[in-house]
Image (cartoon, rainbow, N blue to C red; front, side, top):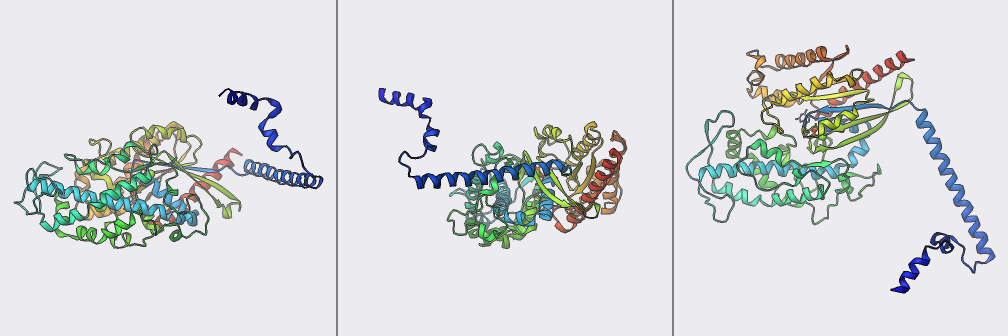
Length: 507
Ligand SMILES: Nc1nc2c(ncn2[C@@H]2O[C@H](COP(=O)(O)OP(=O)(O)OP(=O)(O)O)[C@@H](O)[C@H]2O)c(=O)[nH]1
Ligand SMILES: [Mg+2]
């Protein structure tokens, strides 16, 4: 022990500096070796100097180049901010976008399993209502359908008759139970300890909670600081353009959740296409097709053994954002001078808790804000506060953004989003006037309802903006790449022109 302490002590004396010792030539170095060593050292220095010079040159050009254009995406949770960011990526860096398909495949599988779990839970509720005291999915559960019972209608407390489940349904449910493990395995992979909010890992069976609460309480959110996209790719952080997404997926991985998804594929299709199950969902007011991350109409494709997501699938995949994502790209300013300009798009999480307070630091220095308001949510309440209508929340948020003095010079572009779901709801007979009382008994067609909403947002913009500014508004379905890309090009042009005008005013 004493010897050890002595050694430790002597190791730090300047005469035996370990670095000096390591760099010193060997004591028995020949003349030839010495010449070789000196030549190698000179070559290393020459290369190092070139690198330093290049770094300095780049720094200078960056300083000289035009200021980057910065765009901030804002809107409530699930409004479509990250989906809009994906459109920007697909438009400006399609190869890098497609290189991430392996990771999105896992998210899509997670979305599928989540939808199936919601159906299984709806079945459990129905079964519990049919057979008082019955525990669904236990080995003793009664598989004989009993008399029809009812659940309360969430709207008005009116009892609704539920269709009866048969022994076949119960068997199907049993066969699909391995999917719950798949869900947990995928979440564990996506959210190693410390990388996500607690809600991502809360998977305990929930009873006595509404369908909407269940929908959100178990939603997976991955912090943007965690490089989750690498986990599902065989090549980890390799972003070479040449990598085909098919190669990036490890098809031979025995633990690939895609295997169980494939094994359960036919049963999932049977479940989703079953008339009784469809009637059960309708009776419980569950419209999975309007929910984010809905893939049940494409089960055949997404559960296939060699499934690789399409661009559209990636846009439809749902993964809640925590934190801030920054995406940079350069575009040619074409006939406006011919140079290239860097763009930076910022995507922030839109959940009410904490996050919105975190937006303010990004207000400074933004060229434009892209504000997304999902108009299809007019008949939904906020997950964060069940007393607040989601459209009303968007309007309040819009008010606070347009009236913010820090943003008085910033262009604000409004996307009235999720038009596809909005139209489907109107066609299904859901009345805007029932939820937006001020709309009254006006016609429930798209033209009248959408114009009304546009006018409301425009009015707030006019009345609340600290200084007069142009109202830019688009009706969007940002999961549709074609129409969205046209709109984004338009937005890009608007921002460039506005930016040029500002700089010429200053000059
Ligand atoms: N059908 C349809 N789905 C949409 C549309 N826009 C977004 N979505 C889907 O809605 C879900 C939520 O979109 P996101 O882009 O993740 O929402 P977000 O605003 O980033 O939400 P947070 O990260 O929670 O703040 C995703 O599954 C999207 O695919 C749309 O116009 N139509
Ligand atoms: Mg997001």
